[in-house]
Image 1 (cartoon, rainbow, N blue to C red):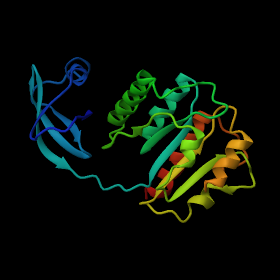
Image 2 (image 1 turned 180 degrees about the vertical axis):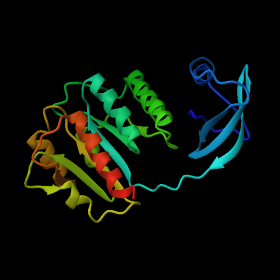
Image 3 (image 1 turned 90 degrees about the vertical axis):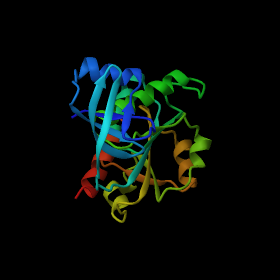
Image 4 (image 1 turned 90 degrees about the horizontal axis):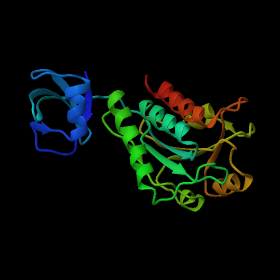
Length: 236
């Protein structure tokens, strides 16, 4: 059953934007009387299609989902477009709560806060991935952060800097005392890794260095690894 996110509307009747209407009518080819899933304001409902011109659905039942996982924010250093798209999509499927693009010193891609089209593209990717993976929240994607902005981030139970320094604590050691209601922030480097200056600055601002083991992952692999470990530890 297909899931769709909608903006706040007065229940029980739900209407859809043009893009969603097109998907319901011409991609999924639903008919009047069939049931779809609707997510509004973090609540999940079953809704029956009552019209296709325009597309209207009538909410019939709220569904309660009981899974509790730590809220994970990924600070992802900017990478090439195809890799960034992949990271956004897969991180969403694996349950990320928020994604902060980071303009690292060695990022080969430079993005300014004025590039609204790119941000809209990223947000569309996570919305579609949220529908496909049956989430009830769409991850937030922020404007790119600089190092100084990153250093000012507060409000997390733990802030983890992923490093290739094998002398650091392992991910298992870092997460062993974290519970399912924790807020976790991971910082992931670009293809060329962090500079020493970046690492030193983040460590000075209470980021905890964490080794992912003896293997060196591609940057697009790290987010998947981290979120998979979190899922494994807390989906029990």
